[in-house]
Amino acid sequence: MRITDLDTPAVLVDVDVMERNLRRLGDYCAEHSLRLRPHTKTHKIPELARRQIEHGAAGITVAKLGEAEVMADAGLPGILIVYPLFGAAKWRRLTALARRTDVTVACDSVEIASGISAQARQDGVTVGLLVEFDTGFGRCGLPIDEFSLPAARRIRELPGLEWRGVLVYPGHIMGTASEREVLLNRENETLSRLMELLKSEGIDCLIVSGGNTPAAFLSHRFVGVNEIRPGTYIFNDKNTVCAEAASWGDCAVTVLATVVSTSVYGKAIIDAGGKTFSGDSLLSGDRQGFGHVIGHPEILVEDLSEEHGHLRLGGSRLKVGDRVRVVPNHVCTCVNMHDRVYGVQREDVVAEWEVAGRGKVR
Image 1 (spheres, rainbow, N blue to C red):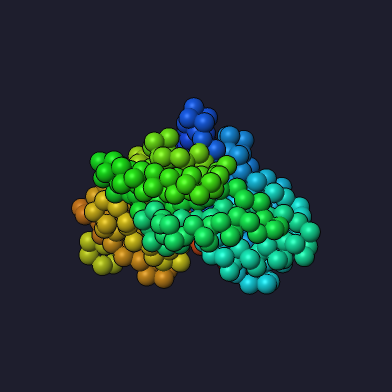
Image 2 (tube, rainbow, N blue to C red):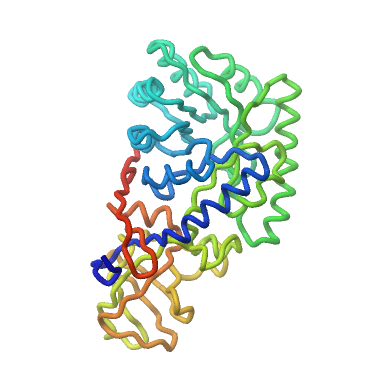
């Protein structure tokens, strides 16, 4: 099948670019003795998670329990769930998962850790555990001060849980390459304080898990970090490029779309809107637009309706029926909008993958 045979809109994955991205980070982690545990929220496709393992990943990361179940069903090993799992129903599902694969969870409260511990004891299983600390992103994680240590000690001692260390998420480290240097220095001050606090209390850490895609190739410089969890690196997107962490040639995913209207002067409408790309705004660079039209830097994807993509042509001329390929702002949410994606090499469609983890929000 050729790309021209596909109906639109369709999500395309350039498999050669994807493989290069996987190989590059896998080689980097091997060189610096870093465990790679990629976050599969970006693709939610077991076949691609398996390729990450084949390129050196020690395991995988997921956000939700439903994603973990999909990956375990496909035989993926070493699953880390980086989300606070609360409630008896989720704890029962977690221990059922732990019966058939090695699973680790992250949490930042005694309440959740105690619930998992009780269920694990009842079901006769052991669940790995990482305690999350907040280094500045301000989403989840215990504060890095002495007042958090009693909670960490209590969690560490709970039965049914295997203490494996700590987890951080430097999601605030984005910006430009020069800005990341400043943020890296600040992050290392915070990480050093965390390491000192844990050492002072005799709290050992087999794993210190961190990392993100914009700072992926700086990971060996983060104090104490020996495992990283980047997700977007497998595909990259407009955010990654505008953050100076990738080039357009490193972007494996494009949305193939068709021009369906040119009636409004200076504009073209494509058959891909918010329900194709997601409405995520650009978080880096000039923060304008909703994607990058390959081969047409003068065109701005200026707005998205539910099913319409609004292109400001900037002097370009497009006609009804023309096709364009657009790099999304945020590839993770874009892929999650689709039931399947297509692997391509040049003009040939060489694979078709179900987005098996799509919609697994519980």
